Amino acid sequence: MRSVSEIDLDGFAGTGTASPGDWADEVIYFLLVDRFSDGAEDGYRDAGGHVVSGTTPRFAPDDEGDATTTGQDAARWRAAGASWVGGTLAGARTKLGYLRRLGVTAVWLSPVLRQVETAPGEDACYHGYATQDFLEVDPHYGTAEDLRALVADAHGLGMRVILDVVLNHAGDVFAYATQTDRTTGEQTDAPTYSPDPYEVDGWRVPGQPPAPFNEEAAAAVYPRGAVWPAELTRTGVFSAKGRIRDGHWDDYPETSDGDFFTLKDVHHGDGEVDRYRPSPALAALTRAYQYWLGFADLDGFRVDTVKHMDRGATRFFASAIHEYAQVVGKDRFWLIGEVAGSRELGIDVQELTGLDAVLGLGSAASGLVDTATGARDPGPAYFDLFRNSELIGKDSHTWLRNHVVTSYDDHDQIRQGASKARFAGTPDGRARALAILALNVLTLGIPCVYYGSEQLLDGAGGNDRYIREALFGGAFGAFRSRDRHVFDEAAPTFRQLADLLAVRAAQPALRRGRQYLRQISGDGVQFGYPTGFGGPVRAVVAWSRLLAGAEVLCAVSTDASGAQSAWVVVDAEAHRPGDTLRCLYRSGPDAPEKVAVEARGGGAAVRLSLPPAGVAVYG
Image 1 (cartoon, rainbow, N blue to C red):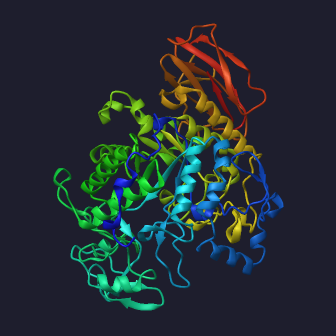
Image 2 (cartoon, helix red, strand yellow):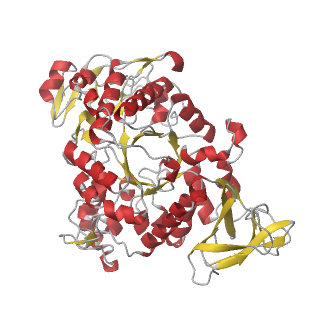
Image 3 (cartoon, rainbow, N blue to C red):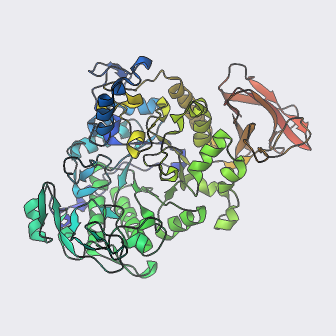
């Protein structure tokens, strides 16, 4: 297709797979398509559990560092991380059984639409966030039929598929004319933000001079240059005001009108939220994504860079997508917005625009990390994000259960600045991997697991590319290896996470229940919330999930070097002295099958003992 006017949306009416009953029941797994699987791995198990023969051997401990033994080898491995590695939609389809056995119920795919072509020596757009054609799947990933087949197979396994979508910007599809930067006064072809648009030189074409900036020239240079559909090649589509300046990411209107680095900002429209006038470009992008919803039978979208979009533009998109999803047959098509900022900002944007959930909440990701490592007291670090629901106009903090997606590792880790690595990138992080996974999947919100966390990928290196290793191997394999895959279902962390997710699936309180950080005590007399008294927290951190009188007590130890024991408060109305709680999960062999409820500190409490960085769940 060349234009959204060619799309027949009526043809998908009533064809969709029904939505989940409650997205709080889901467990999301995010994968970068180029870095997940090419389908050539040897010895993995397919959806039916049968072992598949392939050409890529499984990674062994001795393979670590094999791709970086010499300076030349290391340079080649690093360079490979900036380019396409070879993961495909068809490859991801072969690993749905792996994900289902892990306990994943919803797969979040990175953007799969056609990316801009880059010149030799430039970083490739393997990540998917630099779209050139919003009506075509990028050939590196496969075809539109590959996408549809993956979704159909996922549905056959009872899984959902969420597609990452980009509306804020297109790829680096045009060049600015060399002129004076209005902020710095320097001559540049990459100017910084100005309230008045800059002059555009033309459509970018790799290895060639820019083509004239009009619809006719766009058709002539496509697919090597310009942008598609045709509606995006017309006058007024792009803001053309230059890139957002460092330190101005929260300054309106710069943050909404400026380019996101080299990615070119799309002008969405004008006006206040209630009287927003969408531009033809926003209408075209919305229709394109309605097409992908119906064609591929998708279950949700993760909407990129919502923070940089007009609130009215987000509301227009959310309304149009939700209405069309109803036509297709999906009552709860889920829209997850990437909103970087405070808890109040995320909730305000979510409700004002009609998004169903926000990715993270305030400092949720860093709070998970700080709680697992004991860097901060767990209340202010993480659990308080889900308290004081009256301050956000909610009757109960259980509202947060399906309106917030929580994770701790991700593909860009903006919060870490120039020191990027996965949580398991240090020996201490690896020792605490189970604890942070337990915090992520057993606390309020819809948990999201970043691909490879179940295999302890380390992501060491600092740059974005190093936290985007290829799970299937290739030229940029995990742990600085080459041509070795890491789909190991016998790996300890895979098994531990699978067990935790099985407990979550079996216990409604862990998916939908209220949440309380519990007070602890060393002597069973004086109780208080875990604290490091200004230093690291080395204690049992416990929380309860309660639903209709049922309590599930979860606990992690923030001490990675020694065992920890504590009396932990439980709900005195749900339990009486002499009652017992049954062990649902334990990471150490010595955890008792049952713990007795005793009268302690004026209430009810149980005694828990955890191994270093251990986890226990009782109910």
